[in-house]
Image 1 (spheres, rainbow, N blue to C red):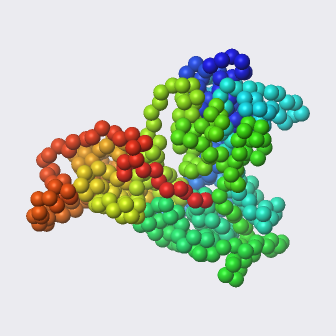
Image 2 (cartoon, rainbow, N blue to C red):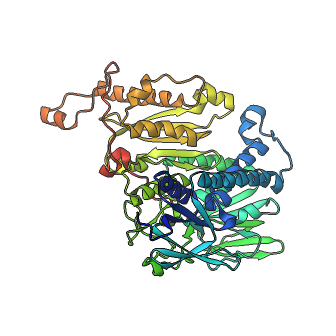
Image 3 (tube, rainbow, N blue to C red):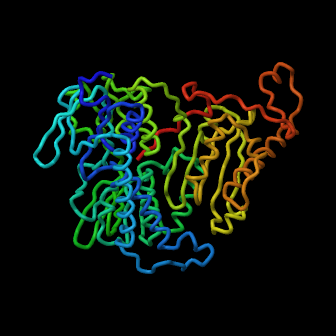
Length: 514
């Protein structure tokens, strides 16, 4: 790279995507810098999004004793009067530690941290406003936009009122509301709805669509809905909000159907807006869509080849995990280095109470694509570890190809779902089969043992079908005969398929709304 610019790679934003892009470039021996406001090192992920919300969830689970009630009774609680300070104290501690981790990683790798907000002057140069009246121009041969998103705010809703909140405002509550309306049953809305319900808040969820999390397995979402109703959550599907009125006594949410819902607070989860309005994109030859998102190609290049965009600012899937990988891939491409990735088999993790996580395809997708499959299910209540931890509702579901016996999808609901999913993901990325799970020895007692139980369930079903098969004409047999279920045979493991080839087991999940 030439030295006519201050840096070989200039990154705008220090969230997961920006961090990994800058560090990857530095590891490759390039001069790299990150532009970020002093108050937002680590980006939305650490300061207002992923880290605070997941830390809050852990505090809720611990203080309410919710996970232990199966063992110690429904009245069990670690703390009777839980205050906001009890919850946010742990959150602020973790945020502070994570910010220091990010600063340390950038420093150790020789990445410059340029404090301030950037806007383009030309396609290679940004003007950085430090926020104290000083400005500085910085240039980069390659630029990565990783500015993230902010909560979308409908124009007809008064977010200045302290009782009408978005997901950022949740972290600034003075008291825990006794009742709350959550508008939007996307990932963020349902995560917060389950947390407040666990705290004892009477929650009503309003959603325009006729179901929640429609990109997930329907059996899993029905189980989640059952558990949330058990925590006194009310669902209003197929409903839209017409207005929200606030008075000294609380709020009233009016729905288009005429229903009026009183509550102490309202939380809006109406999707996210790309944080691009202050970048002055036209100066760089770029535009954003109405949601502030920037369009990119397969290598995360924008319409201006030397400018890349990664993370939430490019839209789906808008996950911290995939943003990190996008940052790494963009940096390698910008540096002209070869790189491989398995991003097409990314896991989806939803930190509701209980957790949901999956990788691969759903039953609905496979049915629509006319791909024959068998289902193997394990329930936590059948596992010794499930009894030990008091989780009687968790489940793990495997979707197995009826012909090749490869794993097509793994869906987990319950304790540690977001950790357990990775074993199924690893099997799929290696082109493994259900037989390998059957033949594997798992530690006992563990939740991971659910994989073997589910695999045995699927194999037994495949065997039953094979035993009942009647002879067919030779031509038809050659075209569609299922693979013989011979347990003694060692399955042949094909080489991993490239994500670009679009194999059924490597298709990316559908877009996550909300």
